Image 1: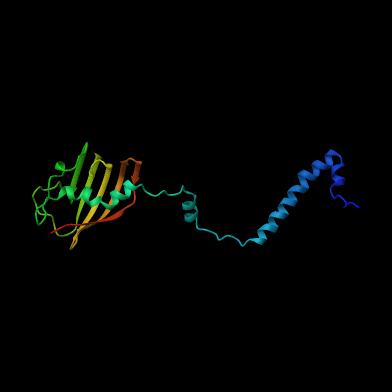
Image 2: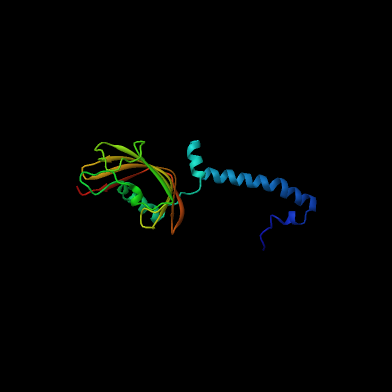
Amino acid sequence: MHAADPYAATRHAPRSTRRLLRTRIAPITLLAASVGLAACHPPSPIRPAAAVALASRAPVTSPSPAVRDFQAFALNALLVPLLDADVPSRWADPSMSVDCDAADVTIDGQHPDIGAPVPREPFTVRWHLQRCTPLDDYIELSGDIELRVEPTASGYAAQMRPHGLQVVSMYGTEAVEQPFEAQMSVAR
């Protein structure tokens, strides 16, 4: 004995009836199944608009080793060229040690006073760089960066604020946009 085929009547129904079943009844069945499945899952929490906007952005990629190295040695690249070897430190001419197509540096809004003592209180260094290679051609820098430098007992610490800074390396061209911190020890 064969089980009754529940769809046998529709298979032999006129074409208009089959079309009616496909266009009217199938969507209702799909809707009922969706509601049934939705009841099985807890509702998802409502996220604030800011979280939705952040979630819709492209995934953030991690910086290349060249950018990480620049951030780790930023003071070696951008502060050391300004310091001479004297104790206590004095301002040096950065053009003697930084290879650039063009660069401009100010300390607290003034060009460095070559030979003047480096202050023991916090100071601000601003660089405008065009195709500079401060780390032996490993990277090339173009753009602006502000260093809020604080002398410490062992050297210097700085808050770095890049503005349109591009790092070019064997990994490609990357924008450094986020502020970061850097530290450097100095033998005194």
